[in-house]
Each structure stands twice: as structure tokens, then as C-alpha cells.
Length: 64
Ligand SMILES: [Zn+2]
Image 1 (cartoon, rainbow, N blue to C red):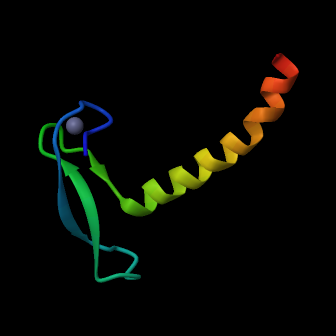
Image 2 (cartoon, helix red, strand yellow):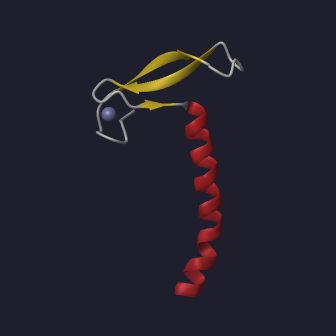
Image 3 (cartoon, rainbow, N blue to C red):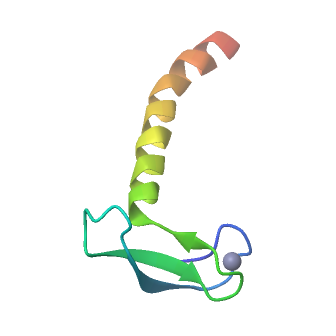
């Protein structure tokens, strides 16, 4: 996995979950710039992307 900010190497890490829903959260941490990526954020991003892709054909029909 590459960092979206600096394209550096990301490694798996664990953080304490402040909300207490899970004891620890598995995250990705960039060893270069320190950027962290939370899997739940990734999941939300995927769902958002999927919705946008579903809407896309309508726009391309109008445009094309
Ligand atoms: Zn980075």
C-alpha cells in the first residue's frame, strides 16, 4: 500500500480507539510522512465512490 500524500511505504499499525467501539483499530501508517489511514475511512470512501459511479452514466448520457 502506498501513501496517497507522498507515495511512501505504508505499514500496518494499531491505535487505541477513542470511541471505545473496538479495543484497538488497525490502521495504515506512512513511514515517510506519518499519514494514517483508517480502514473504516477507506470503506466509507469506497461506498461513496460506488455511489458516484452509479450516478456517472446519467451525466455521460447528457454530455455525450
Ligand atoms: Zn506519506
